[in-house]
Length: 323
Image (cartoon, one colour):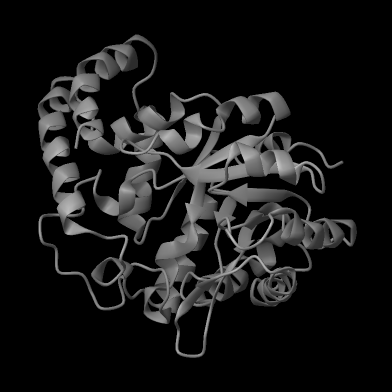
């Protein structure tokens, strides 16, 4: 049994914020958000570290390995001072066609490749990226448990999981952390597992906190995204859904303005108001975005102010459930 991941987070992270590596490698293909040079990526990573960010999250599908390689190069000399997270399960064919599989052999090969790309002998946290309906979750976890005993993984986690899979996982592994989507539009993923998280003292990291720019206002109606940006081609980016979200954000603006808070501050306060949320993942692509995020982290509403904002915005957010 390993130490609980929550204690490890507190040892490593000066901030309840993790750096999401999806924006570091758009030109590499796969999941990404447009071009960023190697120099820009390295500077961004180093600035995040200097500002107190210690957890860096990535996956092979981010830039088809480029995100991991850039993080590995930038953090090589800081390895013992950072918390590295990566994942298995989403691979791709020679033609770049994406494939989801939790086949144990694939889990083993992806782990070994990730260790090479991140230039490290171990991962602080290694996670199964998505459930595979064709493979029992215990099968890849048996591989990860063996790797943990060998010292290649310090903690094991699940992404986008269910209470049922968490129960099965306990049979073969100690799950230290879960990562799932949590934002203004999706609270169900968290609600469905929060009792299990609490009962088993499992840490929770949220992804999708800012919904790929929709919540912060970066995304405008009918944005023209770069060809290397996933939002220009991915089936999960549907403009009819985006339009509905933008309409709700417009309705929220007067309330947020009355309380002198930004949509970014609102989004952070919203996520941290949920039980068992230890860390939020964000994916800045520029130093300006990073600094804005860190300022919002210091100033998002809490206590009575948050209670009032939550009360006034709840009827507006409830419209999403009706769409």
